[in-house]
Amino acid sequence: MKVIKVVVISDGKNFNINNFQMTFVQMKDLPYYKEFFKSEDLDSLYQQRDKKYFTFLENFQKNFHEFDILICDQLNPFHPEWLYNNLKHIIKIYGMIDDPVCTYHRTLSQIWAFDGVFYVSPGYNEKFTMNELIKSYNSRLETFFLPHARNNKLTQAHLDTVNKSFNKRNEDVLYVGAYYESKIERLIFLKNKLGDKFNVYGNWPYKGFRGILRGLELKTPFFQRVKYITEREKFDLFLKHKICFNMNWNEGRETGNMRMYQAPFYGMMLLCDQSAKNQHEVIFNKDEAIFYDCIEDAVEKIDYYLKNDSERIRIAKNGFKRAVNDYNHEKIWIDILNWSLNIYKS
Image 1 (cartoon, rainbow, N blue to C red):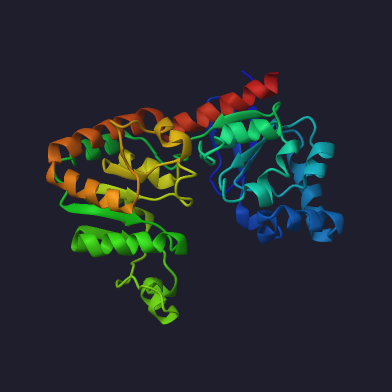
Image 2: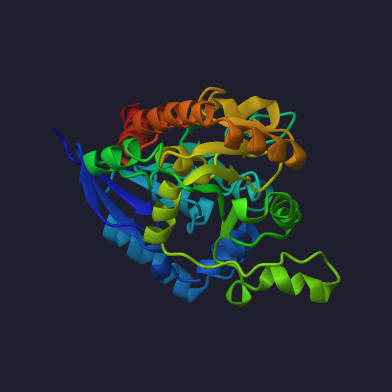
């Protein structure tokens, strides 16, 4: 069986899976890393023939010209004209990780040079699903919905731990996330309503005091320091809480952030915002997760499920089963690589 060599522009450790040999180019090793987040900045480097940037392009072509598949996961450091002219024989895949937020300042101006794109949010807006938007832009482009759950490492020990935890969770509602101004008012509302039942963690600026400092801006403050936690601490908290409160970046548009998959994988009942055109139901159905219409509706649903343990546990177990079966590290990588290989064969 032929070994398929895959180079991935993303942070990660090299590994082999089936007949695929995975090699990762770390984000820190990219020159002008910040310039790759907007297409106009990338184009500026290319049009100005920046020496450092072209050295990077030449070295990449030298080191990976014999590879079969290139995956640009989250961002693309290669000018699309350079890709089109210099890597014709390599199957080129773009990972639309930050869409729909970055669609018009990064993605659409670049994907013409790729053979396929995968997207993590099946929702885009009230008029288009993400797949419909891509196809309207380029109907010949191969597309693939990739669940944003590659951090879900499935082991027997994990299965045993979660299965034993459903009736032993002593904490109520958990939110873990970075500080976003667009989300803070909803978090303040939830904290005011739930009090000690609602725990918030994340990497917030000013050593966790960013929410409190809103008061200096004449905005409603979040009266609590938000503690930063490690990955291990986060997973321990997942196993102690009953409900995970989740919000996507764009309320009512995108869906499918990483927390949406992690919560059920660790046995919490997922309470998540809805996406346009009901695209959230592509990921979990109504027996596997609960979806709220607005922040007031979220409070009502939290109150109901905290009072109805058997119903909450039933939904949490259904979500856990779905996450274990469909949203684990190995299955997701195999699915995306086999899809890419089909493009390669064609």
